[in-house]
Length: 335
Ligand SMILES: NC(=O)c1ccc[n+]([C@@H]2O[C@H](COP(=O)([O-])OP(=O)(O)OC[C@H]3O[C@@H](n4cnc5c(N)ncnc54)[C@H](OP(=O)(O)O)[C@@H]3O)[C@@H](O)[C@H]2O)c1
Image (cartoon, rainbow, N blue to C red; front, side):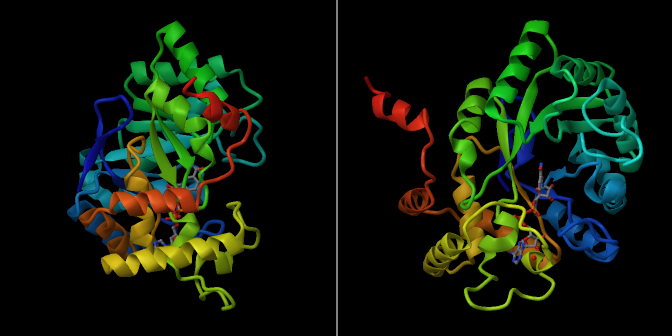
């Protein structure tokens, strides 16, 4: 396993981390469900293969994901890096049980700690921007959590570039604890962050943690043109497609991944994960799995490396249109 620094921090995380959004026996949204014995196998196997980083969130199955992750880790919980999140709605009837107010952050951290059976959280992430709370209130609350030792590092998730930049500038001015990571959707089918978020994070020293690196499983190659989606697969379960991509284009990308996979005697999933691993701004790729077979496949992507020409081919094949002002800046960058 390769370990990378989490952004500019000194914390080393495995380049593949395991996301616990699927760690639920009762099921949550379109993620599906898993038996506890399968979760246990996944966690054990991941640790055996050198994974030291797990990602969860309070809202994943409303706390069940944090609880089951802790249960499966058992005594090893303090030997690994745990990331969780705050922001989502935890109680529909309580307007204070959501968002990024000091009130909700302080209440939520204690609830997450209890579910995780821990005294501290390694990486506490704000799940997405809160329009209804001044960002200064959020950043001060996070800084206080770091000072009192309940949280060791802080990160963002799903922020725009200006929101990241504004936050970090405030943290610097106030001498508050700084964000070290940005958990963002990033895959061969969704490269929007390359326009603004990645340059901002590189400039400010935040490591990127791509989520849904296989576009929810689409890039595995198990969805075929003109065929019904497989039973018990995420896209079969999904009522409304969550990630935005064009299916026709996505099938073309998968067909190219299949060709490349043949050359390396591997799977499309491993090619897609290898392409992400080639990006130096990525600290750790947060994979999601529902069984040990998927985990084994995805972890095997670290056993080999995509040649530079194949990385460049995929770069070109899936390059999104550059919006303004990027195309203008590209045109005159060297002048
Ligand atoms: N910050 C955020 O807003 C945010 C949002 C989403 C996710 N996340 C994080 O990112 C993690 C990963 O997200 P994700 O689950 O969407 O990742 P993903 O890797 O894009 O999709 C995972 C799903 O694809 C299928 N799959 C994975 N590997 C496979 C393989 N080798 N062969 C066949 N099918 C395979 C499985 O679904 P099926 O078997 O059900 O088809 C699996 O649950 C989450 O656990 C969570 O920690 C964060």
